[in-house]
Length: 114
Image (cartoon, rainbow, N blue to C red; front, side, top):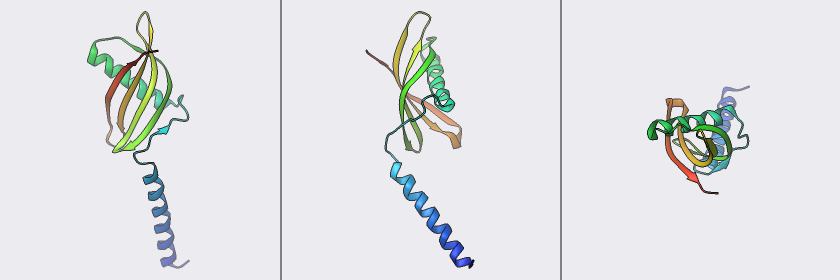
């Protein structure tokens, strides 16, 4: 195969990948597998960080559902249940995750009323 054709093929493949990625940039996408260990890790991070900031002692029970949005990193917006020693409550949390920079930030932790 001629080198020009190889370069052209690589250029076309890269361009199609870029277009596909830009189509989802800034759009909320539902998380298909809420039991994914990475999603659970994000939720546990949020609960632990919230506990540090507030002095509470919540423990994650489960992730109910969630969405992600690609920005300069990925924003995880999750609905979770967490418990203290006596009661279980629902919360909406948001975490900015920049895996390539080893950076995470809890941006929101709000109780959800039933």
